[in-house]
Length: 245
Image 1 (cartoon, helix red, strand yellow):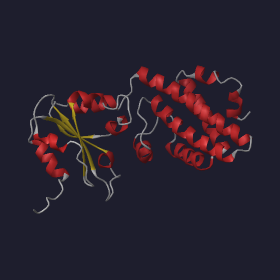
Image 2 (cartoon, helix red, strand yellow):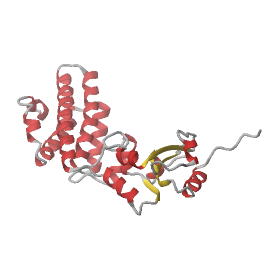
Image 3 (cartoon, one colour):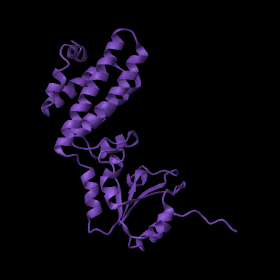
Image 4 (cartoon, helix red, strand yellow):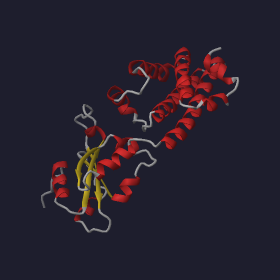
């Protein structure tokens, strides 16, 4: 028997569009980020199904090839996906391919792309404390001559910082692959994108102490402006090491 060629993205979209059990198709990843597609990019596709409606497409559950990755799930599961969770950013920038809910699929994605005020406030407070912790450890280790530890803590601090800054803008943090893409197209209010990216690069690459303190000065002002001064004040005299005084 001659092997069948792998199912292509276009072929599957045609199958799904002809199936009334399919409520929506959502494309994520590089294919949903303009300018990020390469010869190695596959199509990552969510297939949103009506609950309890039979469909032959279930045979493609878990389908994965170099061209096409499929995730089949019900509408309720799709609505809760990434809320919270690692998938939230992927969904925030995903592209609607098919929407049989009169824009309902798009509205679900829009809700995932915007943190609620309470959610953002809680997340920002948590990530601010985590950022301060790693920053303090990095500076203390540098002071005490532990170079490797200082650089590792500096790198950790950058991850926490990015979570914080995006939470302050009520957005999920982008994956590292899409950080520059996100900031160039959707800058963080009050931040110079080039300067921020340069600081992130410098600190994560070398643990530069001066760069860490300059960045912290900006972060402290922004955090206090958003009402998170108590988180920083809880660090007491340790703030002086972070500030370089």
